[in-house]
Image 1 (cartoon, rainbow, N blue to C red):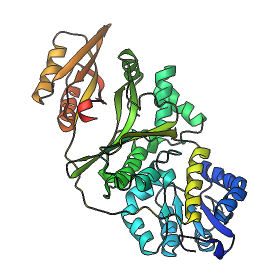
Image 2: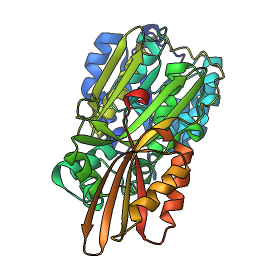
Image 3: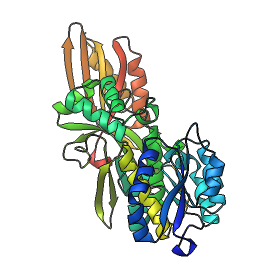
Length: 415
């Protein structure tokens, strides 16, 4: 079957589903429930012809029998091998596998084009938020300057629980796992790796250049503490895991980090498992899309939308690759948190180290408690390498207790 199936090929379209986890199970249910509507709309009736699970099914056989392949396994293998098999046979592939595309997309997208096969991936980024379709289709001819947003529902759920219910990181993570938003092994989400893969794909769409997962600078939320959320409340800020892809001159910067945002920022009040992505362009100013970012049914709905697009024979977004270099490091304002001995000279020594790295302090707050003190600073914008060097030096001072924390602060000059 080609990428543009038609009713002349028969009313039945065989859908091979690779992976039957939360999203795969929800998709199979949706296909069964919506089959009549999809047939009325497209003239083609989707029927699940095979399902591959961890213990059942033959992947190669499912690919060979099906007309359309839906890959929901995650990871690189055997997903990559089976996706390649489908594309080489000219069969449309719908995937939610952001790790696969962000690491192997530079090979898979040309393979799809060479064989006239669709490769759609709306559900790979931001769940039910149609950001891929907007960037790839609606705004494909519009110059984009920056894309930034909350693209991981698990981490947003955890940070919301910490901010609104005062839960520790461990308590909030357990809640996310109990609610089905976090995996038993949440490393990919909480480390920032999942969001980094998604931002690589958004950068690719926004700027027409290949960005791999390895090109993204990312930090997760697993080192945050409840005190950081308390600081946010005290100063009318929100703490979110924010991904940013922006064009700086003729170069591209893509990064994912926790960030303090003013409550007036459009991302500040995006809570729970919701995602939101803002697109900035001189032609359209600013567009923000928001919706569920985690959970089986919302993600499966995005997958189903791609399946329907394939059945409609919709034109594929064109990937006009250019080679843009990685931008040099950006400047950021920082929140710094130190637990220190409560003794004279501590503040001046910390300030001296920051000064050696040419980092200036905007504000300072210090609270003592029985021989120990909490020292919190907000800096002016500085190179991230300078901040990293300063933190390393300060962490080695004898009066510092525990590991210092540095979190970026939203700055209008360099959002």
